[in-house]
Amino acid sequence: MKKINFAWTNYLYLLPAVLLVAVFFITSIVYTIRLSFYEYDGFSTMRFVGLENYLYLFRDANFKISLMNTVIWVVFSLLFTLALPLLLAILITNSSWVGGFKNIFYYPTALSSTIGGIIMVAILSKYGIPQLFGLLGFESLVRDWLAIPYVNTFIMILMGTWQGVGLNTILFITGLATIPDSPIEAAKIEGARTIQLYNKVILPLLKPTTVVVLLMSLVNSFKVFDSIWVMTKGGPYRTSETLALTMYQESFIHGKFGVGAAVAVVLTVIILIVSYFNIRNTFGDTDQTA
Image (cartoon, rainbow, N blue to C red; front, side, top):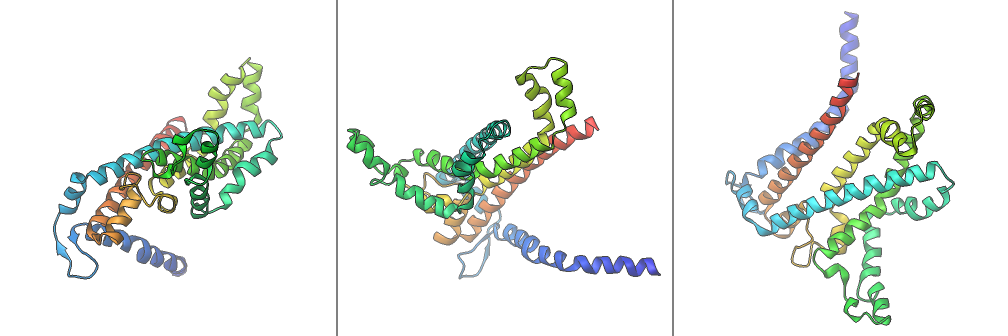
């Protein structure tokens, strides 16, 4: 009898958290999936259209550009926010770079993406850095760089990298600090050189931290919205949109809530698939080595 009461008490403690997740997370997901099968402008009666919203998306040229921009964001963001923080963490761990690191990379993490975007708009507008190039005689560079298709995408990726490098570097520094000395000392005794030491010992032991950084960077790249909205609003002509921005544009600018919900479902499915394969790859290897 006492065991039954103890179990129910535990469930009661969990009840508020379960209710919050059910109301604000699961319900939202179910409603979004349902909405993606309807035509709805926010005012009139919802009309069931089946897969028409998804077919519309894959016929839409703007959606294809948005999907391609999202892939570009993910690939280059992963490249910069994995390789650069790892290199910085190794340099900082083996030197006295901490002060310079704080000033250049850590402090930008305290800024919101919106503030960072506003700063970059001021710097890269026609009257910012491009004006300096004009004074040096490069008149062709005196233009709003954020209005140049695809160039603006790479500029925004660099801005996002600048803001994300600090946190990822701290995670890598923490991961390096948790590596025990014994395997490193054993490798040194066996004559391992610096590159071999990192390839064969340190980087494999740093894999759990790498996976955390990888998943965080993946999710942030897929759902990037605020910095793009502040800097270009997806323009010019929707050429710098990503899937998160397309979802907002279709829902709240064009009043196509069903199409916006379909974009959200596609984005969620892509994130789940990519995350699943990353996690399975990591923990699958862990299970085999255990």
